[in-house]
Amino acid sequence: MSVFDSAPNLVQSMNLNISFRQMRAFSAVARAGSFTAAGRQLNLTQSAVSMLVQQLEATLGVALFDRGAAVSLTEAGQQLLPLARRILDDLNQVVAGASDLRSLRSGMLRVVAPQMLACTWISSVLGEFEAAHPDIGLRVTDATTDDVVGTVRRGEVELGVGPERATGEDVTRSFLMDVPIRMVCPARHRLARRRAVSWDELREERWVIYSSDFNRHLEQMLHAHDTSLSMQTAAEVGYLTTALALVGVGTGLAAVPDYARIFAGNFGLSFVPLRGPEIRRQFFIYQRRGMALSPAAEAFVAMMRRHAGAPRAKKN
Image (tube, rainbow, N blue to C red; front, side, top):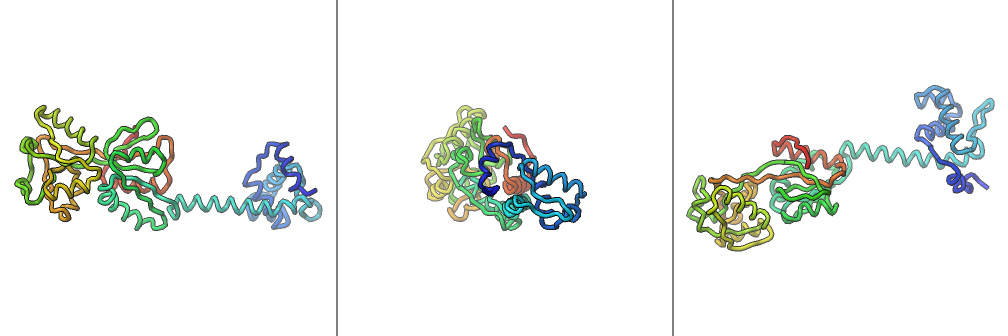
């Protein structure tokens, strides 16, 4: 019977506590043929190498070396050495893999953002990130604004970026930036060339709504400023790009984050600052509570904060 045949009983009969240093010492002595030479290779004293091997032998319950005039492997040592070297190779690959992850030479960045934010502001940051870290894979999910937190909660992505939403107990958020909200109208609209427009001037206008949650937020802010202000709905859609298209054909106006102005030419739109009150929308970074970010995600968060000019904020 070989030492491998008895391995299951050996594992069941003892609490194995084998260290990486013990395995390295065993392999080095077998390769060098002496404890002294192995110590030089490992930058350890001869006595330290000998102690590590003795600890391994005591844990395994077998002698690995015959310590005569010359050091040689026992029968058990010869059988265990190939297995030990395979284990060391695997561990070295783990160490190398961790090093690649830390240095961003490998890994995957998985992020979700509202569709319009994803194809404008997030894409610009991702372009810089990909140029700096070309070995990191990118997986971007563009969702509706209302589904960003849910996508993070389900573990489909590591990070979410979006406006303020309730998180529950299993998702945390930290402030990223606030973005001014603009009135968007067709370029031919009577207000298209104004430097700014007040909400009071928009009382008779009808609006294209693309997020029920954001619409409630707007209504609350307007009522807090003037209880007589409200927004009449012309159409309700799921995506901001669809809302912009409907504004372009004259269906109604929309209240839109400033980063969407990149599409003004595509849909024939004008973006006009709002006053009385001015409205800004806060955006947050979302992640699952208690889950440490990967090095790739940490680097991307740092890059987003540099682009946003936002201070590091506490999570809640």
